[in-house]
Amino acid sequence: MIALIISDSKHETALLETYIKQIGYDTITYNWFMKALDNLEEISPSLIVLNAVDYPRHWKVLAQYIKDSFSTKIVLYVQDITEEEQKKAEYLNVLGYIKGFTNQDISDLKMLLLSDSEENEISQETKEGETKILFLNPKDGTICSGCGNFNDEQELIVNLDRNISLCPGDVLSDAALKTSQGIQCIQAEVSKVNESNLTLLVK
Image (cartoon, rainbow, N blue to C red; front, side):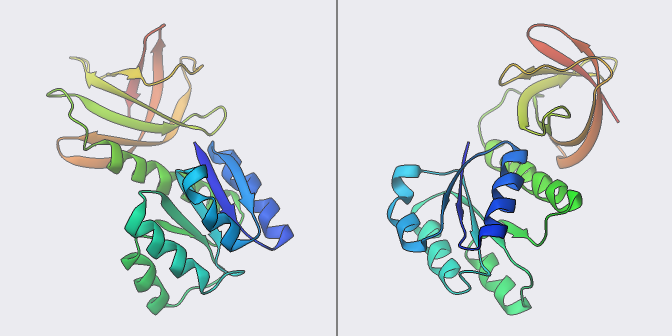
């Protein structure tokens, strides 16, 4: 996954790069807004993080362009945002905001991207009774996904979309589950691991 960062302030740019990489994205950074816009189609990022402090007006241009032509998610770095600006951002499909660089800020953004990925992917046709799960790998913080079913013991047997290294006892503290009742945030513990799937105890 590629994240395009558009930011002109060196300190914030470095923090944003670190921040987004921790979530599991490869980053491409531009400090010239127009150059980033010119190369947008070539880069084809799945996420754009724009420093709205550096570009307080440009972000609306970018968001409108994305809304009309792409399905890319947009996150703004802001120090403060008025209610009126929030309404504009919501209309332009801005996903959310980065307001700081604490561990809690990182966790909040991970869950925001996690929930949005769940919403986007769940529209795909699935088998009756099948459940979609997304979670943050507790070892490296990357976003992982898979499909599964609950067995008679109410354990969730998950077929992962890619191979990851987890062990029995690992706790998935940041996860989103799609069931027939909708999307919900859960916690789960890995109880069994084999080559093809995981068995999770959902809490």
